[in-house]
Amino acid sequence: MDEKFLNEDSNNSSLDSSADTQNLSESIDAVEGELEQTADDTTPTEEDCCQENMIEEPDSAEVPKVEPSAYAFRWDYASQANYDRQMYVKGTKNRGVTTYVIILIVTFMLSVSAVIASVIIGNSMQQSAPQFKEHIPMKYDDALALDELYQVCLPSYVAISVNTGSGEGTGSGIIITEDGYICTNYHVVEGHKKITVITYDKKEYTAEYIDGDETNDIAVIKINAQNLPKAVLGKSSETRIGERVMAIGTPFSKNYAGSMTVGYVSGVDRLYSVKNDNGTVKKTLKLLQTDTSVNPGNSGGPLYNMNGEVIGVVTLKIAGSSYEGMGFALPIDGVRNMIFDIIENGKITDENAGSAVKGAALGISGHAVKEDQKYLMTSQYCIEVQSDDEGDFIEWSSTGLFMEKVYVTDTETLNALGLEGAYPYHAPATGVLVKTTSEGFDAAEKLQIEDVIISANGVSCGEMSTLQEIIFNSRAGDILELEVFRNGEIINVSVELGYSNSME
Image 1: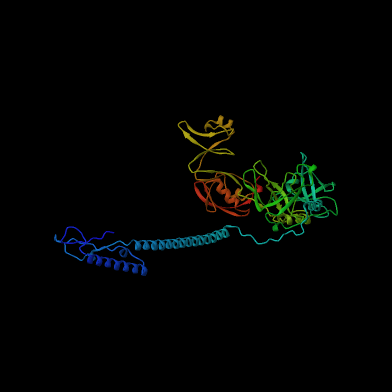
Image 2 (image 1 turned 45 degrees about the horizontal axis):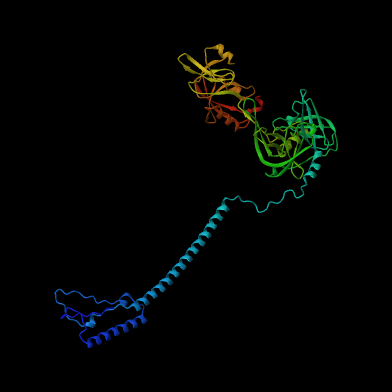
């Protein structure tokens, strides 16, 4: 680097004497020695590498005379290079440490997140997953193979042929006692003229009808035979959903007697309601549901568990193109007492021995009406009347396809549409209009034709379905507290419900 000296007595820079030059060299050597020592002792700084004596311009035009060595300055490249190397090494080390620390932190966070996630998912699965017992012991440790089971059970089954005078039907039965008492469904032998029993060994017997109960759909017949292989009756109350079962029956005809089908218990305590033609509930049965294939002719036959015990009497199936595998059996626990009541006494002495619930009925027929609405009444119908400029009319269809507008004064057209004897009615209140009462019911004594039942047990009966639901949830012998509109006033009437099977 150039070395400059300022001399106030001259406009040009020059070297005045060798002494000055020697002094300058000594000054430079001293500075270099100090810089080298500083570089050895400490990390150099920017100030150490470059020392500048900045010259401030004086306020006046005169430049003071100074010693040349005081104004010498120089850039030290060696110190700068040393500084840069140390900074690079230090920066590289710092970056490596920082990267390593970041990797450790990220790895730790990922590990913690994985642990937390596994705990949360595990707890969620434990809470949502169904809890099962660790082990359910096999109920039938001595259960037979199906072919062996069939051979053991078949002798206690019988095929039944029933002649009603107008035709012949088939069914199945179960041998209950060694001396010939057999149980079957009531509907199998209903209306019989002659009952024939065919045992597993093709022997035929004429059977005597002992007694039966239509509500529980159970009946007992008897053949004159001894030492018959009787069935072993199990406990249907111990039956579990998913348990394997076997049915033996007579599907379609006697030619298929002894047919065996196998399936599983699909449900227990299934409620099945049978209705009268008027829509009232005739009875409610509590049944076992199975996907075992059952068909007409299986009725009255046995449903066995895998120990060969009868746990049900096959009674019905839900049929149709939209249904499959919906067969039902009477639980043996629900009919056992009634079966032995008939065997021991020759008839039913305890009507409550079965598990079926007879439906309750009020003993009336009626229609829902609205206050101030006009109706056209017949023995079967209650039709709303509308009005236009020409008078009152109804919309009616005799075919159910096209509605016709018929004026209530057009008697000829009304008769042609099957509405003979129609008469006008103007509803005085909203409720269920009593149209008829059934003999033998309490309602026949306490209710009158054209009474309007406003409420039952405190529930408004603006719809017929509301009253029907109240009756459905009641039992024969229960008392209904009715509010009735009669002759322009509301009165309270207490009516006892009867059995719905008395209302055919």
